[in-house]
Image (cartoon, rainbow over all chains, first blue to last red; front, top):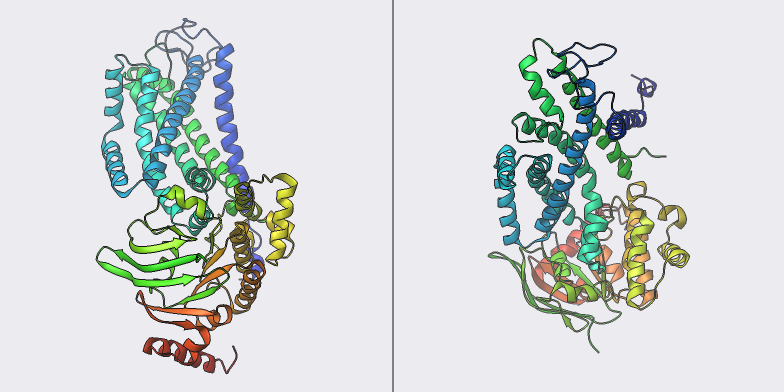
Length: 285
Length: 269
């Protein structure tokens, strides 16, 4: 082995990272574009019958029709919008609540920290489905909003625990002591040192949670705890396709593919963005 | 005259274990004190206690007064005003002493601006950058402009320590605490950093609390030393006296070890 052999890699780490970011951007961008498009235009009226029942894919109906004769492709496009709303809403609530709690716990006195940590562990041990049912019961009716709130709360516990551990690690670093010796106030330490330093890890986790939230909403909808009809979330489409999965498999396959593409896209995007945000991971100029 | 730092019967305990026992010393303005001892002897904890930055598990007793203000038991808010004007600190490991995600310039600019604000002066933009580059030049950083734009991982160990020193100086402290500032550096860089600290402390008329396990290093920089062993001060006095006529057995063994080390190097310092 000479050094030259190793000097000719197929793709440099930098190119690979750029590819990650690009693929992520394309997948998520596509989803966002479709979601925005449904606000002004869909191929067919989402509520109206436009063809025969359970028609197979054709030029007129790209993904066929459902059991009521509605255009399935239209429903999937609207599902993209719902998935984005759910993902952003749940991750937004989860991140806001979770990061705040986690940072507070990291800074709190021993007793308060222990109490918070125990609460979080209990909350995490609690199935998120149960939390969702509680929220739905408390708000009297299942809606997209109640599903988002429930998922956000379940997510906040996970985010809070991660934030607490990460923040504690950062707080032990000398540069925090240095900042404190030089008279930096607590809020400044949080915003200038702690949050930026835990952000790369947190961002990747939040992307993961985004994907999980979209999937969890699908299962909530599947159980009837999510958005009621006619909100065509992908989970509801899957539920409706269950009865006809042998006669019209496209009904289960198409929303499944859409779901997988979005989740992969968000994860790749987060991976790529982490590298952009972290100078130590950037390739030296 | 009020001493800069007066530590009086300071005892630090973690649970039942006593980490520092009944330690007393005083640092007057412009004075240079060395705190010597092996690792675990309580040197660094003493420094942290005198700035009110002890980890919560360690309970202090006794008194430590920074320019007349009691530190032990004081609320963080009150201490914050003292820190960054009365005292600043340089650490052992220059890699962890700098935030890895911030450019060197930004990290030093922050305490510069804060100190100016506390003096009732607002500086930003060009003026701030000018002061920053001047400070980098004072700590003998080559190409201050380039270094200011660099991230810590793009700098060498010596350069990082110089940035850390610049950060401490940005506060214009009356007392500089240097906690093993040269231990993580190679011998050549070590000598340069020591010379730099020596010059800066003299130029700026700061007091210095120098913490080290290395006798040779301490002897060159400070005028008075305290030898700590397992949290107890076993000897104190002027450098020359302590090193030439150590009264305590532990100090003698330290001095003998240092001599043996020098001899092993063939008399090379």
